[in-house]
Length: 183
Image (tube, rainbow, N blue to C red):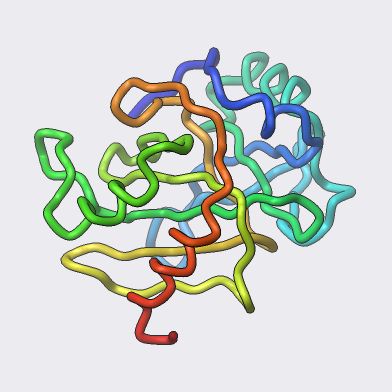
């Protein structure tokens, strides 16, 4: 899936200096989204000194689109956001698989976008995890939930074509966490 060097994401994300660049690299024989700083050095999802503004990340990507696959947003303990990654939740026609429908219904009023692979959806909300992030198999896919120390590749490809703002969804987040075998 190629990504456009122009995109629209919620202002509540773009106003934070929690952005980086990323590209696919082989790690342990599989493609991995490796984070980079705009100066070309490796970035870290736990070191704010390696992050930059949205505008700086977009400019760096636009200047070298062959070098970078895109930009990413870093979740931090200092921001109110969490992210949910529904891996492999879309079928070949781009429709939600059955297992993902109840999840998307609970988060239908907040910003979500199609992932770089075109096979998943990333959901952004406001709320807090009561511990570390979690990941668990669900249906024939996987659910990952983070609110710090991770980043999401951002595509700007709005789910269902809608540009929504990021909403407070603690109750929905708590519900989703009950689906995790980790509790």
